[in-house]
Amino acid sequence: MKEQQYADFIWWKHGVIYHIYPRSFKDSNNDGIGDLPGIIEKLPYLVDLGVDAIWLSPIYPSPFKDSGYDISDYTAISQDYGDLSDFRLLLNLAHEAEIKVIMDLVMNHTSDQHPWFVESSSSIDNPKRDWYIWKKTKDTNQPNNWKSAFGKSAWEFHEPTQAYYLHSFFKEQPDLNWRKKDMRIQFFKEIEFWLNLGVDGFRLDVINLLGKDRKLRNNPSIFRFLFMEKSWFNRNRPRSYKIVKKLRKLIDKYPNRVLIGEIYNPPPGDSQLVASYLGNGKDSLHMAFDFSLFFKRWEAKKFYKSIEKLQNEIPSKAWPCYVLSNHDLSRGINRFGKNKFEKARVAAMLLLTLRGTPFVYYGEELGMTNISLKRDAIVDPLGKRFWPLYKGRDKSRSPMQWNASIHGGFSYQTPWLPVNENYAFVNVEDQLNIPTSMLNTYKAIIKLRKKSKSLQKGKWKPLIKGDDQIIAYFRTNKDEKLLVVLNFSAKSKEFKLPKGNYFTIYSLLKDFENSKPLNKNFILPPFSGFILKKKTENQ
Image 1 (cartoon, rainbow, N blue to C red):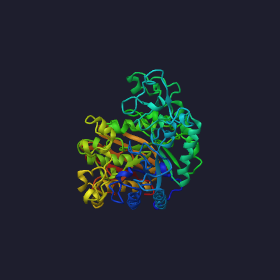
Image 2 (image 1 turned 60 degrees about the vertical axis):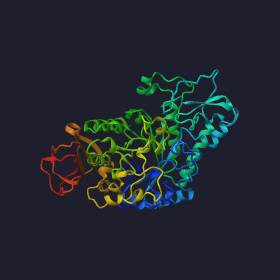
Image 3 (image 1 turned 45 degrees about the vertical axis):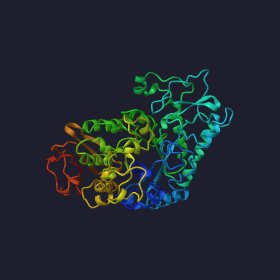
Image 4 (image 1 turned 135 degrees about the horizontal axis):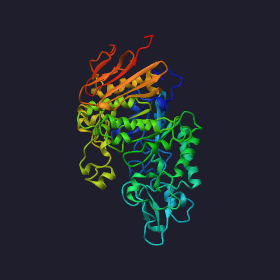
């Protein structure tokens, strides 16, 4: 790395990963849809931001019944985004810029238009019939009481073969049968296609759903279903863990690659469940998302407890990661309530200074907010189905806001989703010129992180655990000792420094003199954050 001199730097552990929703990042050919050449065009921006890797939401061919998570070909690129030559170019240029590339991988299900399912559904004696989960019943009753993620039955009757097939999501997304060895062998070959191409890892969609109960037993009552995941028969089964370990053995054949799991679980998340998919820290997933912060009110104590629980739950040799926003849920800033932009800067400092890998969702570094859509503008099938109770996932997928020109500089044509109306003042071009902007906050802390072993890999030791709306913790590595102090409150707070002499190396405040030594007691202004360094004898 240009700024990274440490030989023990591990990109997926010590760097920053940036999540791109390709359809919304940058449109290069003015068809209203973001694409791979658009990402290539913006690589200098990503270099300037300082990220170490990009994770791309699915870019495979798809009928787009579920935003590309219904894949019809695992070894090609959707024509909406370009082709394999575009992807190879992106991969090569990203690597030249010292940015890794992570792909999204959906292993639980395919599109019903995937050739495998076309064959599987063609007849009951087709060789690929058992590549999916089929069940005949003696009457018209469904095989069991399993529900899809969207509330309806997880079984769809297939008239031509007079049998039901399982779909954990939309009926256009039939579940694969991971008990079938020849299917597993073929799927792993398609994973190797990308590894051989040079892809640096995979984010694994709903990886904990792969194993299903062999007997297809009914799930328990709704209460136990929601709160006792060990009693479920269609997720978190022993087979899911076995498949993850087989996948780890495969990817370990390729140096310096990573597996990141989405552990699908109802709110409020479950760090213990997340930790279980990390195995002993060496034999399963490298990292897995814990979404508990998504469901916490803006309160320091609640944030701290979620962080502490994950740090304590994961195996000693495993590594945590943190995320505040993604493509399925509300943008974090919209959950913060009043003073959301001030709070978002505090959250940014928290995200980028914890022990663990930070994931930044595109536009989060600008303070991009959810969009509000009328029913006829909704693209997400969930939003169409459950309007007005639930308006879908489009709200957090709006086009990236590059500048104050038409459509936020995303495209010259009408985008597939509207650009947020605040693009005139929430955009990259304008924020670059404002020292305390959200963008410059992210850039400054990422730059500091690149220079500090303590922030990358140091130990984490809490000092104040959310009391009086303050979170404070040490990050230490050898002789470097940093102290991060965050005020979650709209009020000024008095903070007493621990023993030793400290000076500020970064502050969220505009006019704070960073090199000025600090008094033992000093005032934390509202929604402020400080990174302090303890003086040593050599300083």
